[in-house]
Image 1 (cartoon, helix red, strand yellow):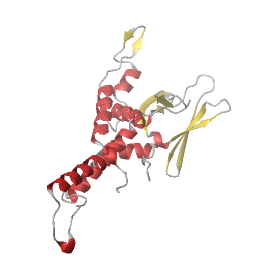
Image 2 (tube, one colour):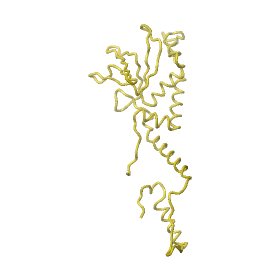
Image 3 (spheres, one colour):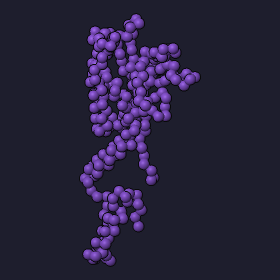
Image 4 (cartoon, one colour):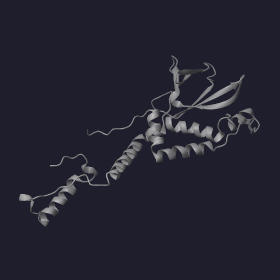
Length: 229
């Protein structure tokens, strides 16, 4: 009592309370993801855009399952929801043949003695896939994109997490309003005066004074939780 209850700040809670239950946060994430996905890429060779370059073709057609727009909307959407986004390169021989987005809540970094990731582990149920990181080149089949986090060197900070308190307040207000409507918008109570024997009325002066005291001392947000004497 007396303390606000805030929702969890893990990926599942942010996705559920922010993206899936809050229209404002949902639209913000969609606008950013769609705008970012619409920016074209240019693969340069010797300073010139190479339209027929294999890397450019891969970016234009990441894989056979979804379109380029859907692919990058997923990627940037994950970035807004978790602060992290992961791309996997599928090889044909030694050449990248397809790109796939990976859910950030399923990805875990395995750190080395120096505190930096030495491989990525991707868990789906009981299946675990491991993507090692080359010690010399830093290359891996997984590309990690992260937003700046002031207290974490490995994981990014989600914009939705910064807005989580506002989302909680907005969602709670919606629940309260819906409950009020379900209750036919009836008042929470009434103060009824009965004189001796159930008869009698307050004078106009008494009624006005009582009404003024109730409104000034017990109504409004500033009086929330104040005991009534």
